[in-house]
Amino acid sequence: MTGTLAFLLALAGLSGLCLAMDRHHRDRFGRASGRARRRLMQGLGWAGLAGSAALSILAWGWAIGPVAWFALATPAGLAIVFALPWLPAARR
Image (cartoon, rainbow, N blue to C red; front, side, top):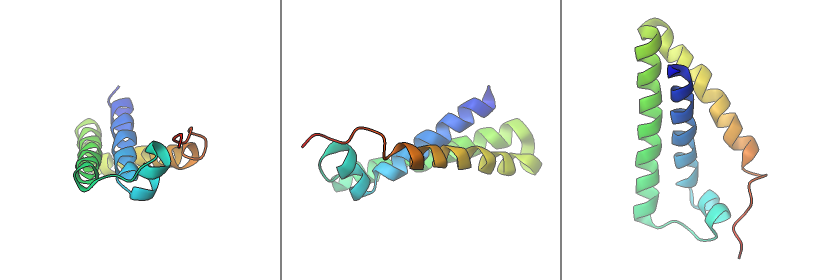
């Protein structure tokens, strides 16, 4: 259960960092993100990644936790990379 939650937090964190970029935000929502929204998404993205790392370290300890976190964050990032072209774009 902890591994699943760590994966979902990594997915949410990487999604937040992705949407903090103007190009990706414009592709999804049809307009560029403002400075406040960009900062919010960056903060939430880094918080999600930090929470995912913390859960991994709590579940597997300092010896295996960081390795497990990378093992969970990698497919989360790949899922975002491969899903972005197929997600419906914003209607203009």
